[in-house]
Length: 276
Image (cartoon, one colour):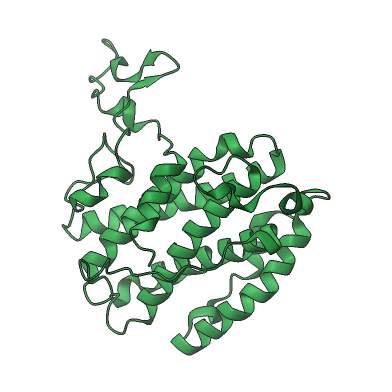
């Protein structure tokens, strides 16, 4: 069974027609989704958690299980953030409600799938503090909510990429991770465009330019460090141009064309800012 088919099974507008119904539906989704996701794994992969050390998540997830544990922790963070945002009365403008309801549905789907894949080795859901001790107020201030959403989504995209080497020995799991990775990239692009349209990050594109954090607090710089890299496989991407065939290609387009991974330590450091 393809992961996208699993997600499509739960593409039901009833999931978020009201706060109470949405919470109840997500709870049921978690129970059913774990079983479906676990059954969807190719024969033999479901035993991974019995062969790998769950403690590999710290400090580096050097096994497929460790990589999925890190991914699940990040998905817990995103799912809980959007669940709380949707539950905060008056926070999200009516025009954006459907967008974040859909993103929340995706993140809860990712949680169910990864938890099912890890089975007994799934880490417990952490206790999150999205205010970081009172430094932020994301559930009473929409611009702050959007800023954290952008940071979380951009982190997720780079973090999944950073775990590819730990999943490459298990091609099926790598495929599933890449399917989630591409959806996270769509989330990141959508949130970045929302912030730009609201004038919170004027001119910000749907993708990362250099190591520009798009007006986010300095604390978010770790999410973007390294994205200014222009060298790919020894080739300087910023030197590409059209010659006399057309207008010059800006040097910034080279680094923009390639997303850089972030390593496990950086991913964990970012997540830990919001874990009590």
